[in-house]
Length: 354
Ligand code: HEM
Image 1 (spheres, helix red, strand yellow):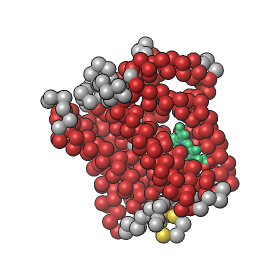
Image 2 (tube, protein in one colour):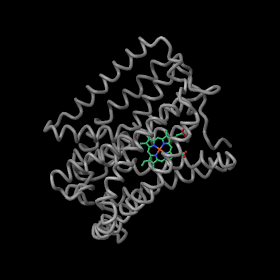
Image 3 (cartoon, protein in one colour):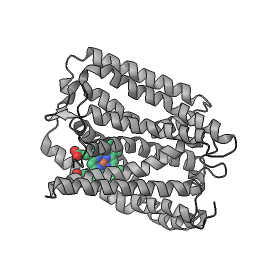
Image 4 (tube, protein in one colour):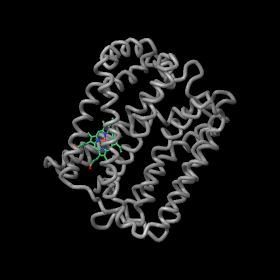
């Protein structure tokens, strides 16, 4: 059985369609959230219409992932050059939820209200025109597909990215996700764990280091992405690079929200703030965007690390079949963790009381 899931290559003849689909999906994203709000706000019930609209919102990044995988299918050593730009665009669509949240926060800070959808459509159309013009004037898309970097230096950068990742996971990300998981035990349990953890990560020396390491993950990750996205072909590879792109936008947006919205305006950025108390994530027209934004961040963080662990395991001699199988189990665990954390954010409690 093919555990890595290598796609059948898409013909590069229909490339125009491959361009249009990710754009269309990104444009539709705010509409799916607005439809959810309309259906849900009626009686605060998860009606079939509300559930369908929410599924539609999650389908946008899923479509980006599927397209990136299909477009990235390769014969030989690299992605078909004609498909590469479209594949990268599709990967950007995976990051639609944090992109739309970041836009909402920036517009809020600029005091521009209720125009998120219009600005979103304008920005994507501008990007579409830019990408189309780039394709028109590019004499040779081959160069785009050729991974130009020095393989040895690339390997060193990958290792440093990995070591920094391990430190971040140990010092901040692991405890932070555990803290969010504890949300399912109630606001008080979450707060008491958070207060203890804050002694560590809000420490005057550690805090700037953690922020610096996050920015390093983004910058080094994007450099690694440039090469890897031209080489990827199986679903776990695409999941790993797409997840990396998602995390780039999510981390930058999350740091901006916590420091600008929270610290600058003096709000305590605690669990109640994150889950939109008292309105909740589901019942508020703005907050609903935070549902895919947060839940997929947890899933993609685990998927990214699992994709990376698979490559490291193979390099150290594990058979491809076993490494792929373990990585898929890890991805499934990431999905479960995301579901539990999200359930807590939506008000589910172990005690059964909501
Ligand atoms: C907290 C965030 C992150 C964590 C915990 C993390 C973790 C890791 C780990 C452990 C590796 C394997 C390194 C190795 O092979 O030794 C890796 C590889 C990679 N990461 Fe990240 N990463 C993060 C953020 C990012 C971001 C923001 C991007 C941006 C696109 C990114 C892109 C990549 C890419 C492309 C690779 C694969 C490099 C290759 O195989 O050539 N990562 N990551």
